[in-house]
Length: 261
Image (cartoon, rainbow, N blue to C red; front, side, top):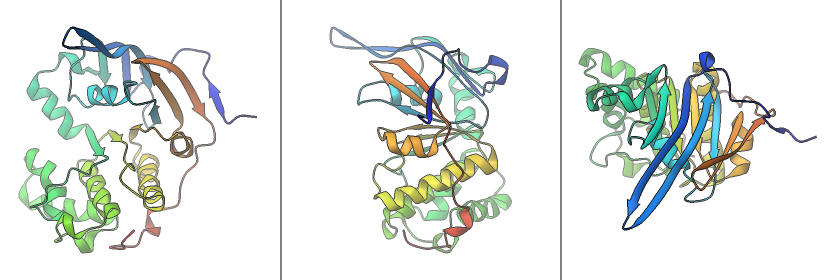
């Protein structure tokens, strides 16, 4: 029997949704051509759920993630996160949303080379105007969660790829977001290091109750960690599968502090 079940019914009830996307569209023009990057997608995600967006290049999965992050605005439809329609928020309200509700992890790490590990992780706290007396403790705790407290004074160039992604993960989690968005988080890592990073993401999902939306082109990765597999093609949602065999991973304590992947 397959461990993937295609849901024959509608998405989870609205009242139980951390994310609700309704008839979402993102169209733009390239010359005279209309590009339908996202074309009428509707989806609901429960609080604490781990979902994976799958599809070929150009399918619309990263566009959906950008709309969830408030980095782009829809052409039509709505993106409702924690009861707020992002399309209706001002620029200032979206900035507050990104600081306090969302954590983001990217394939390319996006660390600032001139800053130390601690300074990179602390950056969201500065933007959120957290009191300086609190920032050191919060930064140290975030780095301890990913096993890198002993490297807090290093620069990104002095770290391995896996360590840089752990720093990016610590930065994404520093404000204890309710929603973690991960765009190809293992794309620049070897398979062993990628597994370590994904184990951490899954553990945070389970321990902290964070809702996780991950974009990936690797079906095997999605099947190992995500509870639902959402397939997109040509900007449309083509299938929504429940993965009944997504299981908890090894405890975070197995990643020794400061170890190099």
